[in-house]
Image 1 (cartoon, helix red, strand yellow):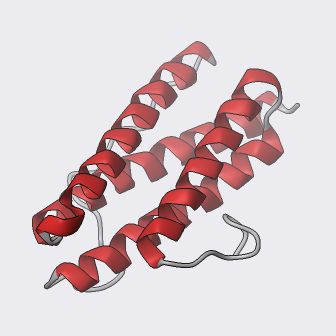
Image 2 (cartoon, helix red, strand yellow; image 1 turned 180 degrees about the vertical axis):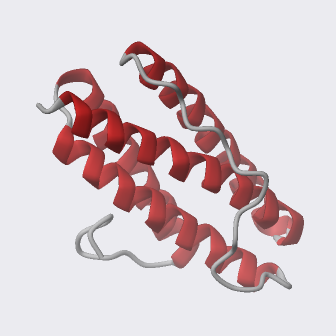
Length: 138
């Protein structure tokens, strides 16, 4: 595999995880009590993936991309219904980036990226209530 392309895709996955952590902070502030535990699980999962990617980038000889102070949300999140839509959107965006990392990597990193893609697709289905044919590609 092309090491430069793999590092670039890993940095993109890290950037997506930073954005997901931020987004789940918004979700957690607006979500109803009935789905708060699910939001916390998503937040924790993305924090863990983010931390893993920081180590991976360093192991590859790169400098991990820092989180932005804030991120633009794709739409306003005034209530629980919008928070659910945001959570599904975050998972779709993360899945797309991991699909790219699967394509550009091999070995253990590819397995990790495929696992992250699968987890994001499952969380998206749970939030959305339905799936898509090719998670991360639509």
